[in-house]
Image (cartoon, rainbow, N blue to C red; front, side, top):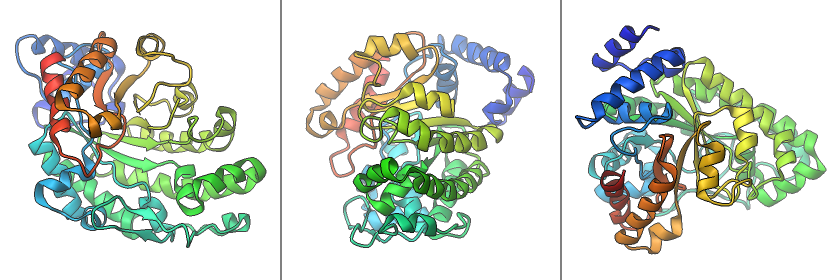
Length: 384
């Protein structure tokens, strides 16, 4: 795709798949937007494109990753938010319209995919859904061989999420960036087995775990391909267990790494950007970048090979766009002034040279006031 064609599509309110645009064209377009940003306020799309090409926009992009927290705006129950795409869309759109932000990350509860594999899920009225671990799909190691293949286009929750993507893309257009989302296969499996028992099985019965991951990955590839067809420009892969909160690095690389690579390749073949979300402690940036080759990593804690933010920027700042990483306890217990000050410090350390998007380390806590989400957006505007 040529430079003129890219700019023409953007003017026509169309977003071509960024993976289909050659790097020189993306860099030229980002530079043109950056020049305009010296004199005018940029759109969210322009701001994000400049940032992921590692140039500095008019200000740092920001997303509060509101998710279920925005239910407060219109009083939608958690079950409706989780199970009804129309209600879910209203929640995400309310958060985007009332609080703001440059990305709409469609992060729902992590039991979504497991529910369609037959896992019994509890849906509290005012809290995140979670698996009923008294009724796991995988009760013993023999059950790994019995995990069914399901169709994400017709299974209840995945099909609703695909519909959600379509609704949000249509409503948002090019006024913001919308990202799809998928839980990596070990994560899905942990919802059906329990994380602690799954980790033991990874050590004692790795072949059985990998066989289950193979079945799940086949479904997840169909799932992300369906998300690609909705018009989202990016999809995030939640590879939580590629961190010290999950498996040792070598074991994660052996068991889940190759499957996350397959999912990432399926997304990239459609021309979409790949993001990685990992809110675990000391995530393995190097391993996850090698397997998934993401453009963006969303994180809550420093990676295992970095001791501070400046080292993080020095080691990874020119390879990846960093999205994070305001801590959840600060959002829950801090004042808006506290949150804005931490945002300022992170902007100072991570924003120079581009490649940084201000965000929480994970989803904004769903049952606290939205004042600190607004504080993050204001901090990006004031300090970014």
